[in-house]
Length: 507
Image (cartoon, rainbow, N blue to C red; front, side):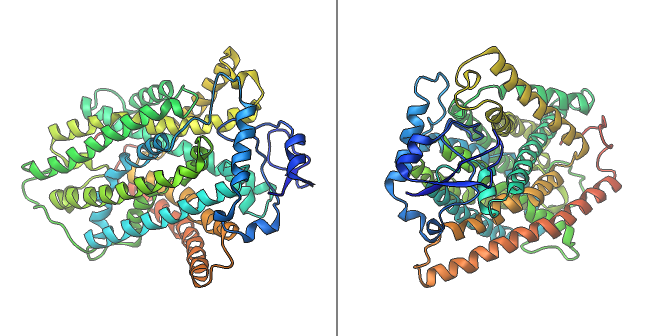
């Protein structure tokens, strides 16, 4: 496969605009080690321009040798390293995906269904899941076609016309997205500690405790080393979700029962539902599904990247079933007057503490997963693939790694204190970041892997992907407005004590 590789590049940064043509043989002989910012040890360069003929081929027509030869070069390069990165089977990758999607955000679905109604809630869930499945497969095809472009920032630069600013724009969104997710887990960790201890100490102190615990567990440096924790996290969160559905059905009264207001539920939105409320509910659903920002990193650590679609199909089927059942069952048994986000707060006190406790591994693991991704991103820019600090266990390497993690958790703590609303924080992340990493980028990516000879189906997909791009920008524009207005309304209503406040935020 002919390609154009960068002849000059700033060390560790995005690609230079200057290009030089190589034959495949020259590329193997002349490839220079550079600062690597992917999530494994690899030969990779952010690409500002590729052979135009490649963009007129389907990913399925990629020659078998292009990917396989790339993997052989990578395997030879990392020989002898004590820390190995491309070690994940598709089963291990599925474990990481399950842990990403079988998460605490699932417990926001009953609240979303209470706003939208059961029928629109289910329709929205299925629609978003199919959109994410389609865009995930587009992303996978793109990564197979361009194995040298292996993290979200280089992909963003490639998709946005090879511009230097596009790399930095994607990098900023990438780091902020991950750090906001960490902040969500710090906030929820404090909610759990307040709930289980009946607000024994100041909420700020509980946020500190949650951040420190997550920092300690985020210290492992490879995804393969986290895969067992991923399975365990997904399993315990699944138990928490199932218990919530069971407890909602068997309890005498929902949490917060006042003895006067009955349990009511609706198939359709209540009369007077505002745009802000409806959009927030939709964004909560979108946030839970959109996780493609980590996919290039996971694909880059797989032994055989061609197997990634197996993990995606398995996870999507499980998502649809689990999310629809959770949203419907808990909402119907709890009703409009007593629903909370997360829905653990809608259960009777004892049931609430039991179910919420099973979610603790997920509170820790999913936060540390995104912390690890962010720290790895920066760490691999500091040390290239031949650095001793990257390949071996050195004091300096571990000190820098720990320092990067600590920095992300400090920022996450601040976010948790400034935006202490669970559903609003989910919606804010969805509107600011999921618009790009869930819709716009992969709508653009289709035009790099499309088969122009595909006839009617190709024309249908062109319209579909243009629609995905428009949908992404809609989520960014009116979506951000709805979230900001909701946060303002929450502060006006006094739902929390304020920024860095000690008020009880337990369920």
